[in-house]
Length: 381
Image (cartoon, rainbow, N blue to C red; front, side, top):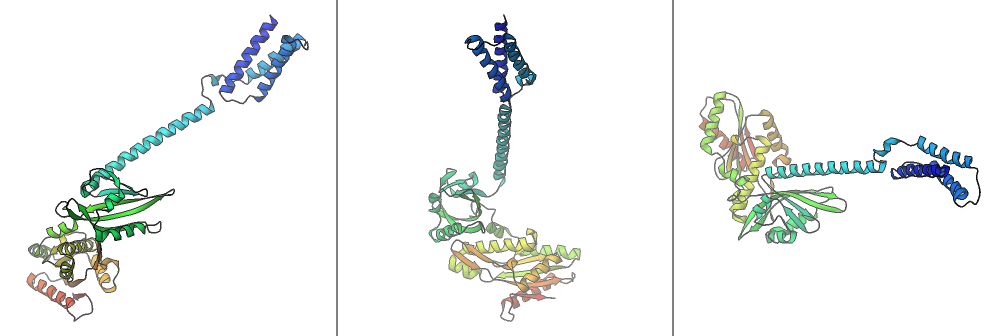
């Protein structure tokens, strides 16, 4: 019976060690005791090479088993091992990352859908991806296409400058902006593209936003804004409304004197693009209110400034130059500057006829255009 008890104890002991081994628990000393006890049993009982007193054999097996049992944590029977727990934690983290990525992807797609412009991704492997708005704009059917197929539809006069602008991008200067002609169907449309190059690992990608300035298909452009501007009768009504408030304001008449020459040299579409870009920049920098700027004739405009601080900014720009009045325009291979002349008057008398006010502004503008001044502006009072 004693031998059977020893075998049962050894079997139980072995089971404890297996459980600990599976659960990746430390058990070096216990394993050494077990190997010693089973070795003693095999030598003494099984092989009978060396007879050991049964009491010694019994206490060795029972003692070693009790030591292992004392250090045995029953909770490992239903708790996962550290490795399993680590894997479980990794799976949980991976699931959270995937959920976060999916949430980010959906938000990104929703944001793209809100954009009025088309978005394109140009990778350094020669492929491009365009959003639905972008491919509708350029007349493509698929969202993925090669850069070569896109580039070959850029106007021959503009493709060299386009490629040069992309080739110049680097970490210190990753941004670019350009306008170019693109062949859509049987005609060319104008595209205005603004983008940036991003760098990751040893790869690069150019992300760009593009809008069409083809006024027939995409009316929300600078040119269409130019065509929708309020005219001289609205200008007079606006001045009358300001006079009733009896608050001082400035009237700025301006003429884009070199636009007719550009129309003759490049065509009316270039001239309209430059005027539209000019008016948009002028409005953004000085009034930010489309109701305060008017088109009086083809190349003559009026701007009403009620904010004294904004007028001081304009005045400093006229006197000292700077980027605010740097009207250097580039469309495809056309690189020209718009030369505006300004006639400016501060209005503080509200009872006099508006015709007199307008005539004084016109006189100031004529002086600015003439050779009587070295400046491109003339200010009254």
